[in-house]
Amino acid sequence: SHGLKQRHLTMLGLGGVIGAGLFVGSGAGIAVAAPAIVVSYLIAGALAMLVMRMLGEMSAAMPASGSFSVHAERALGRWAGFSVGWLYWFLLVVVLAVEATAAAQIAHGWVPGVEPWAWVLLFMVVFTVANLTAVKNFGEFEFWFASLKVGAIVVFLVLGGLAVFGLLPDTDPVGMTNLTGQGGFLPNGWSGVVSGVLTVVFAFGGLEVVTIAAAETDDPARAVGRAVRSAVVRILFFYVGSMLVIVAVLPWTAQQAGLSPYVKVLDAVGVPSAGQIMNIVVFVALLSALNANLYGSSRMIFSLAERGEAPRGLLKVSGGGAQEGTGGVPRRAVLASVAFGFVSVVLNLLWPDTVFLYMLNSVGAVLLFVWALIAASQLRLRARLEQEAPDALALRMWWFPYLTWVTLAGLLGVLLLMLTDDAARPQVLWSAGATVLVLLVAVAREWRDRGAPREPSVSTDR
Image 1: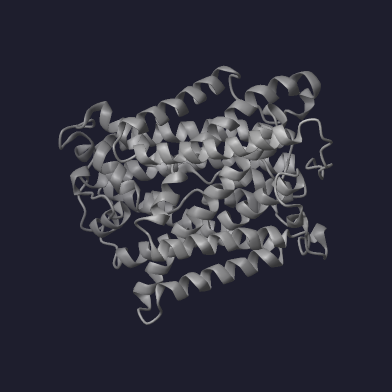
Image 2 (image 1 turned 30 degrees about the vertical axis):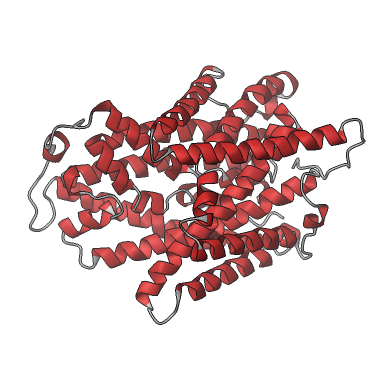
């Protein structure tokens, strides 16, 4: 259906990627990179921005509900579309369990009488209903969630900037003291910057959902182009700007992994109940990510079913006024994603340090594999589009093909660096194992179907 508006897509692009990874996880990055975490975010953000530019180019030219899975199939073959689609779906439904559980822990702290599992059940039911009724409900949830997150960061940047210049009551100007003190800007050297990149690069995951959602707008090509153009630059500004404020207001040695640096800064500038305020923001960020992941996973598996790469029973959609966003919802696809999400939640609650940890490790580096396939697909499709339909290239990748190759090299570099890091190595190995398994299934399916007529799939062009 066409139930999403441009404002939904724009705020999804801005807020969909701003989550607990920024508000809480950035503390671990500061601990290893010190003030140079700003450079780490610039590098990771540049990689994410280049990937999104490539994805935006393909999605504007060929809008599809399966986004990069469809592009990979068109560029590289069925094996690529099958593999990247199922890997991304698996990534979303596993991470969904982390978000639901973390949000439940925060809610349990506010209302101790309600057990975490009951909160998880409530969240899953609410967002399942929202995603089953109409796509515009998903859009409205994400619009207001994203507005709160973006508003919180803007207020934080303003307060932090005033504190740096000593313009808040009872504060003295700190200037560049904290950026150059405590060992200087690079106290841990460039190795600290590299470690910071490994810590923060996954915080940019989630932008891909914008191109999936664009297929459900009135003008997909124009909508995705505008959303990508605005989102990547503003998100880079929010991320890098936040880190600059944090390391400028307080010495980097005051930060601790696992504790929100935002809370420490707000406490330092005298904001009352800073911890509870950030708890609310993180809670909203987690629910927003849960909602977006449920939406993205349902559309991805629906697209796979359209192309015969998933059970065709998942193609059933709701009736109603599809043009107004009250129909056209792939309800079976939503329920299939929710069902596996519930399994992930149960595993997280019962065996967080064994079974679920293995599942989490198996998707730990999948995002990088997905990004690499996006870049490889763009290399093939851009050349084809320039020959066959140059007018469709409303949004173009910068300095093609050189920056595409630079992006691929950067992603390979991150993966190799993760292999040298004791903490990150299990994620790469488990994720590589999951990827190989999916690739084997894809190749086996192609071998089985070789020579046999393929079932016609529903067109994904708009």
